[in-house]
Length: 540
Image (cartoon, rainbow, N blue to C red; front, side, top):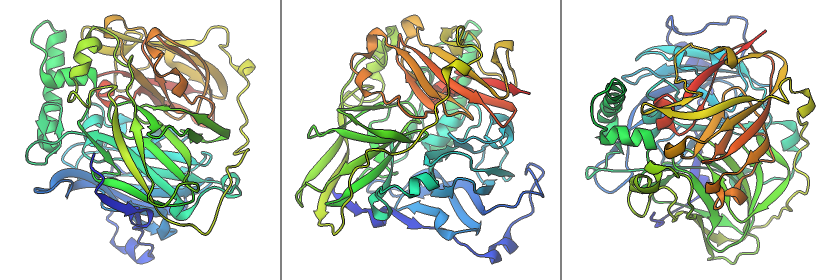
């Protein structure tokens, strides 16, 4: 990745809020798809639109993308910040306890919706595919922010098209603050930096290449064709296309984008920084490390701050996972350059397909598990202030494992492959289907175990459970995890967990507040789109 375009944190972000009640006068009438709750009085009201866009990502032709744009209809204009020079969605800033209304307008040519990844919300507000809306329609999301302070994100979730919609630009961060976080002496303002890491591929005309198509329209056709081909093969005929192969394996690009830019780097002061990093890639797993060998100091994961900082030589970051780093440049001389790397690792693709064909996904230098630089930081100035790394970050009330109603017999979800189709316990996704062993009781605590032993097709799977922040109770490592096992950060609250080939991972979670239909799935988006997703239902 090139690093010739240095930008500082002030230009990384800019405010985009338009806080004026006058804007309400121009708000179109809701369609029948909009969910109306007249008794709900929002503290923050945002209009969020998904629409075609273009971005100058390389010299020459602009790249066709899809983008979220937002405007504040009620509340603090600073609640919305745009990533400077990026086509990615704006960063939304909210407070715990705040009532949030977001009117989503779909200006794409296909169905879409919004999933609030990691948030604890009612099922009708969670972005389940059954609530996807068509072109020109609106959907109103209304919920109270109940999560603790942390780095969350939002993205589309229509069945069969999540991968392409995220790939072409529909993703953004949602940062939650609370009282506990506010009293800590953490880096703030220009020293609090959001970072979204993604991998993409370009054709000769600077258009994104995805599956076997280029550009949003062609890729959509390619994805549809791959799904049709899969159906044909399951029926006993047809050959596996390149697009279908990628869908089976996961997509791996040959260019790293940081905040939607291939030329991004960060100018910093001699001061501690809070780096909030999201792996926004469709399928690529990163093994994060500083090039000069200094430790990564982890202060937070998916569900917010840890109890205490954790020092790691490297950190594994799977798709959809977030990590918060304390990066202190106080002792670095002005002019120092530090590179964040993804180190080489084995084991993410252990089966027959992964051993040889896994290395074919992407270019030889950017195959799954390859080593490459991701992001350059340069120390360019002095700082007048200083901060000390807190010994205690947060107080976490852990779930007592003794409260689990199935402690001695965990609910088990085995990742399976049959007839060229991913599944859980042999089942693939159906829009509203729920098996008897996918029903859970409201106000109960359970242990869920995910088992990844899918034989000759064994490969890594990041598992995401909607509506939940869970604890990782136990991880039984497989043979393929030697290169990665020291990089897990399982100490905090999580909503996405990496399960490597041969691993068994037990999670502890509590089902509270809401009944309804929610999802659990692999967050390799091509796997999700091709069936590695199921519903679970919370019942009273």
